[in-house]
Image (cartoon, rainbow, N blue to C red):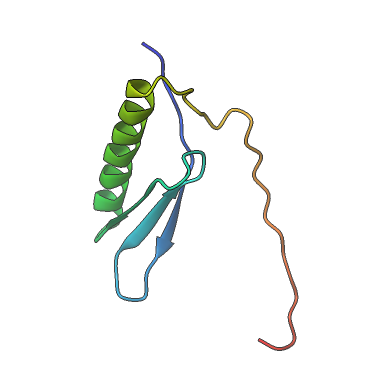
Amino acid sequence: MRVLNYRVLLRKEKEGGFTVIVTSLPGCVTYGETLEEALAMAREAIELYLDSLIAEGEEIPTDETTLEYTLSLQREDL
């Protein structure tokens, strides 16, 4: 058994709840009303995404080669 780790970005929505983006899996986006639900939905979305890749014989991406960096911008018009 292999352990796979995936970085997820959680964005709090104005209407409530959280949108979750799985950065290493293009198009893997989900939503939950609470933080706990959002994380559970992310886990399920990742599992389904990986299942489809395996079924198609595709490579399984990981975060191993992903670098994370935050860029800061200064804007006077905001």
